[in-house]
Length: 223
Image (cartoon, rainbow, N blue to C red):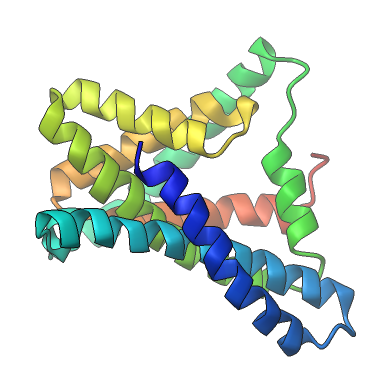
């Protein structure tokens, strides 16, 4: 309850600083570049605001450490395992999206159109940095290290998995993708639960986003 409004407030503050820097960098001459840079900075502001608030709530108020949000070492075999898990996650989410589309025939994948609008043709490299590196890093700390970590302490593991997965699905604010992202969130929570580290989940999440980004920006589906 404290985190959500605090994150959005921090995002506004951070973007008020980063936005003008982006304007100065793009110079206003290339509208496509300007759009891609501003979209990237908006995401960075949101993630930065969330991580800053987690630091305040976890480290300053409760004396937490990086280990408490899942930034721990892990066994080496989690790296190849993460590749396999990412592939399985893509397959599961794809099938669940088909089911969601059948259940909600009028719903659309607004995430697809938003990504295409945010990153015009020619700037997939910038999208890749944000979507496949920055977002997995921050979201695994936010949703697994912080939110699932809290839920796991307050609830039995099955309930914590379901709650954290549901929050992950709702946070993306795309009705059609709620069920697929609920499943993705649960899988990533399980990776964290079993590995004791958010880093393998970052690998899974990043690879999962690579597939989605290729679909949105390279294959160019009709959103």
